[in-house]
Length: 171
Image (cartoon, rainbow, N blue to C red; front, side, top):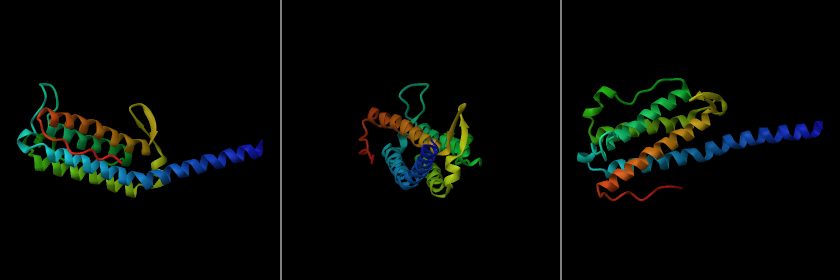
C-alpha cells in the first residue's frame, strides 16, 4: 500500500510539472496567433466603419475591440494583483481606428510579457474568479477564450459590411 501511495504521489507531481512545462512551451505561440488574428480582423474594418453596430443595443466594432482590451485589464489584475489601464474610458468615444489598434497591441503585449515572466509557482496558485477557485493558468485560457468570442463577433460585423474576412490563423 505504501508503495502504491508513493507511486501515485510521484505521478501527480510529474503530471503537475508536465502541465506547467506544456503551458510554458505552447502558450506563448498560441497567444501570438491570437494577437495576430485579432489585429488582422481589426485592420480589416475601414476606419469609417468602426462605429458600425448591427442594431441598437449592440457594441460597435470599435467597442468590441476595446472590450477585449478591457477584459485583459480585468483578468491580468486577477493574475498579478496589480491594476493596469490601457485607455481612459471617458475618452473612448473619440478614439479612431489607429488608437484602438494601438490599445489592442499594448493590452495583448502585456499578456505576452506576463506569460513569459510569471513564475511556475504563481501559475499554479489559486485565485477566485466568479465564485470559482481556479489556477492562474486557467485565467490565461479565459483571456484567450474571451478574445476569441469578441473577435468572432467582429468577424460577423465584417461580413455584414461585405468586407473580406482575413484567413483564419489557428494552429
